[in-house]
Amino acid sequence: MKKSTLALAVAAALTGFGSVAVADTTLYGSARVSVDFIDLGSTYVQDAQGNLIRVIPGFTTWDVVNNSSRLGVRGEEDLGGGLSAIYQYEFGVDMTEGGNFNSNRPKWVGLKGDSWGAVTGGTQWTPYYNVMGIADIFNSSATTFVQRSYLGATYGLRMDNSLVYTSPNWSGFGFQAMLVMNGDVGDNDPTSPNDLFFCNSNNKIQCNVSDTVDMWQLNATYKNGPFFAGVTYMSLEGPGFGGYFNNPANYNTVQEVRQNPLLAGVKYTSPTWDGDQWGLAFGYNAGPFSASLIYEDGDVNPLYFDDTQNIYVTGAYTFGNNIIRAAYGFMSPDKGNVPTYARRGNDIVQVGSFEQDDINNWVLGYQYNFSKRTRVWVEYIGSDVDSDLIGEQQSVSIGTRHDF
Image (cartoon, rainbow, N blue to C red; front, side):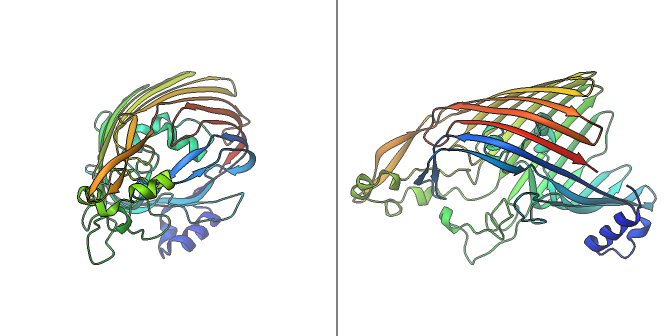
């Protein structure tokens, strides 16, 4: 719907550009709702210091779920000489429980040159996701499933306060670089995890991880016909808190832990604030068949303490208006047994441990396309894990989606 009266009216209202009428502007959206059956095992939750503080019991439920519905405008204006102004304003629309227009979906503005690429600033898809997202092929956006199948689910999706450079396409080759600079609050650098502050509820990185660059990401990609290959890297540039975790005063006493074992502490944070993560992705898409393979390794994720590896394989087959999809994932933490500690006098002593175990994920899906814009789906999500931190999941999602 280009340059329509509705698109221009919405664009003018959202952007405030007085000259929006001369830009090529598109109003778009996607409505996605499903009925989900969820069977989730019990899990443990840790605070910012890594202490286990309470147990969430497992549950079985039916729920009408919003699956990342959105509304947005995007546009481009030719400035002459091979230079263009580009922008996108996209907002999450919760079709089931309210809370509209407050998500961190893409909102950015920038300049694009025919010969030198593009520079954009705002809230944007990350270089990490623009490689690993080749495996994002299912309709259901169940949070628990996404977090346990993809190590980049928190810090590798979209980032606010970001500056991105995107190169031109050189015969299939390209690269991206992102800097995340989220400002600073407070008078002092954080000396404990509890000293980190959020600017608002939508930020994914705390304001005072550092007072310069909080995170940076890179990728390099190659696409030739049906083949895709990419490599990506991200690094959090925050404090390590080594002094904090080596100070006995920051642990509960042995006697307190004996009365309540959940008061024991660990010498790690999740994610590791001075950590890094990298990934490889390969894809093939030709005719009715498509497949992808991704590999991740790092500690910039809130799922497990310390380094974790993830392998995820997807496949799809299209026949007529039908699409069948399947995926398998295997996630494995380096630290299977995480020791817990308490204070005895001026010493830090080990008082127990909890288990971080491998996760096996399975996904099966069927999709029927009524048209290019309207579809229905049925998807099964399952995971098998024996861990103190993460419970098993079985769920079925039955949904519909319409794009405009």
